Image 1 (cartoon, rainbow, N blue to C red):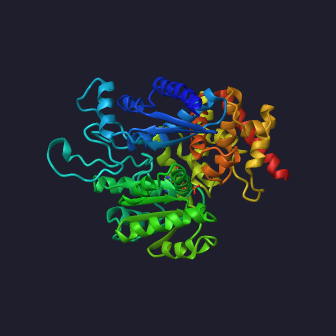
Image 2: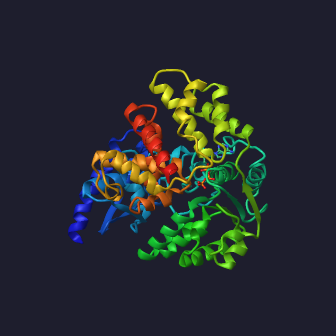
Image 3: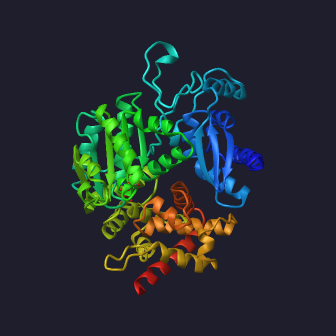
Length: 491
Ligand SMILES: Nc1ncnc2c1ncn2[C@@H]1O[C@H](COP(=O)(O)OP(=O)(O)OP(=O)(O)O)[C@@H](O)[C@H]1O
């Protein structure tokens, strides 16, 4: 173990170096904090690292996780999972040390996660896991919410309202405006890609803007499960409980994944009760209404129906067009109205697919240096459009076709090799699973040898971003999509 730790120290230092040289990933003021992290141990494929405060822990578990795990995995020659715990050293020491490393004991500001509102003042005091609202003068006036891992794009302002989601949207706004006073819990359910996650994040953002200092935590039920299991393994149940109970608004996505997980259900039951008893807001999302979560314990199912249950339906044509218009404006994508209407008329059940189609069309046009018109959209979408009557596309079809296209095996796709070609093939297959199936990020991760959902998220984003820039990649993705659809059709 000692030797492993020594090795880990070297590879950890290298992983931090990798972060330093990756432009734009780590805000400069966060770097000194990262240097205060300590690798603790390597248990099989799990690297245990101590973070000096909860902010750094959250950063490592979210935005920085893909890069860090990639770097560790490359260095150690196998897929490494990262578990981050809070350092038991005096937090004030960490703060002072960070100031020293930063060479500036002045007023450092640590940028918030994912470009959200900055988390100011991280050095002024020991960073507690939960940052209470404070009164006083000067810098102490600043209420400092814990990083909430909210996606800055998922706001009420960017959410298009239509008949399909009007009620859910209104309920979400009401909950954000009066946490624990309007509906508690708010339970939002509906099919894949219909905006549930978007609404949960929007509640968090809006509540934070109305009540500075309000403590919001967003988590998927799978992350909650993993966090719970890790806390038991690391003997940190207290920290875990504080993390989920000392807050004002808890947003839990995809609660259906708690089904069949008795231990986690038990823990969640107590979390729910504690928050509800203290008049704290709980918002839950699921692919089904509570009564259809049949393998969930009765007492949880009952509690989920205490507040308001509302659904989101697939959007009608006008709403789909409006969503595409907003998306195009937001991302600076140039597409005339008739193309937006065409895409909206062809894709009706999943907004993620709708957005994916717009990205493919504009990517194709940009690669070929031509304008976006109807003819081009028809060609590009010919094979992308889901065939409603066709058979379901499965992850195994996607993985099988991707493996054979690249001349590799399924084991290679699921394995831990970090060779450039394999990593690219794996990321394309993950992206296609996200685009062509309804599987959640964690479920896709499971298909690829039990990878973490953040790895899938990273792959999906990376391929989406590169599509308009890399012709070879675009061609590979298009050809693979065709093969996968035709294989699925043949059954
Ligand atoms: N009404 C809407 N207005 C604008 N964008 C939307 C709307 N609904 C969904 N989207 C966008 O569609 C994409 C998918 O939405 P989201 O991830 O919230 O769906 P979901 O219901 O949580 O899906 P899943 O159950 O698969 O996780 C996101 O990029 C989101 O911003």
